[in-house]
Length: 269
Image 1 (cartoon, helix red, strand yellow):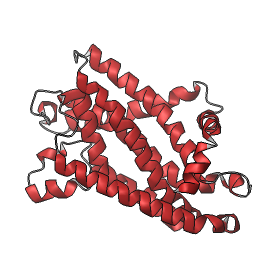
Image 2 (cartoon, helix red, strand yellow):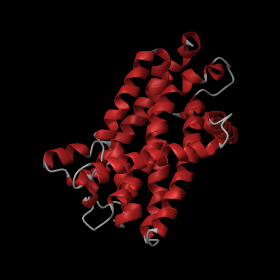
Image 3 (cartoon, rainbow, N blue to C red):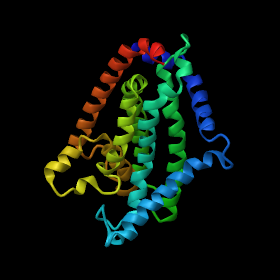
Image 4 (cartoon, rainbow, N blue to C red):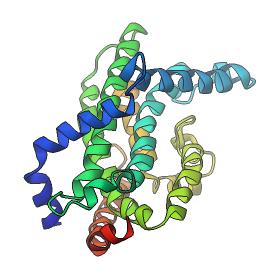
């Protein structure tokens, strides 16, 4: 951990610059540039809303939170963090392979590659969250103290997926099969997480408890608590303890895998 921390400590300013350049590179050549970062998620949100609130019989009357919250708003608040998590999982895993030119430079801190790639996705997330919040205000959802919980869930989500990328990025650099497996599983993560439904309302109690082990649920439910229900930060002690236990495991495995594989990365790439 000391090596990773040291690299980040002395390379902080460069990480922000590289994250900005990564964002510019992603939308280079597009007429509206970075605005595509909002167009695609908004269109995707509309498609899911249309499918489940209009296309599915009875969908328009769905009340997932039990307080009369419109399904579109319920879905929007859950899918905005998902867009970030999806990009963090996929792009974080691909980051070393797609930036292999930095790996061959002896003086470049390789552990920062995942950080600046995921940080560039966080910039987009801030923009989408701001749009979401404006829509909530227009829709009559007044500011609550619980909105400040965003400043707990968002940084925690950012660091969680950086730690995850410490394992996935080196392994994807070694094997395209591992990368393809992540790409294949990402759709399953979406449907098995409480993004389009309330995971707390799952019919079977044993299944609800199992879903506590899905960290995506922790963040999706957290955003809904922050912006919709106003629930206290640590209202579900069991879910919180499970998440932080998983976080500790992810950090440990990430440090172990990255330290073990980083010296062999230049030869592989």
